[in-house]
Image 1 (tube, rainbow, N blue to C red):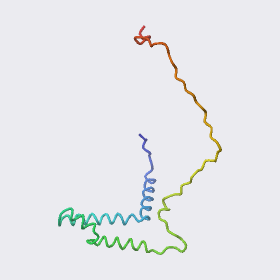
Image 2 (image 1 turned 60 degrees about the vertical axis):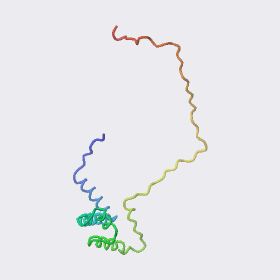
Image 3 (image 1 turned 90 degrees about the vertical axis):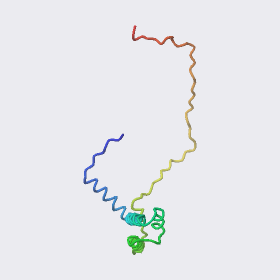
Length: 136
């Protein structure tokens, strides 16, 4: 398919570091920690009862663990951080770029070349059996 692109290890580490920083700036670390908390709760509740009960208790919001409370506090603290005067923080603007739309110049008329195709009729029948000129 495509040849493997050889990159230097330092370049790979830099790329992974940039991806990690973007994930942290978007707040994805809270989603990872919440996923870990839900997994732990699901395992804990599954030991006590059925799997259906464990899923219900995990996601109903009434049986939260200590880690869930810390995640809720952390998300609230991130949202309450003071913003700089006159600036609106848009986290996705850090990774999304504005697309430029190219508009073709206006033309009054577009002309296309007219192509006429005609089928070729042959009156001759092909040779029977097929010629074997290479063997003669």
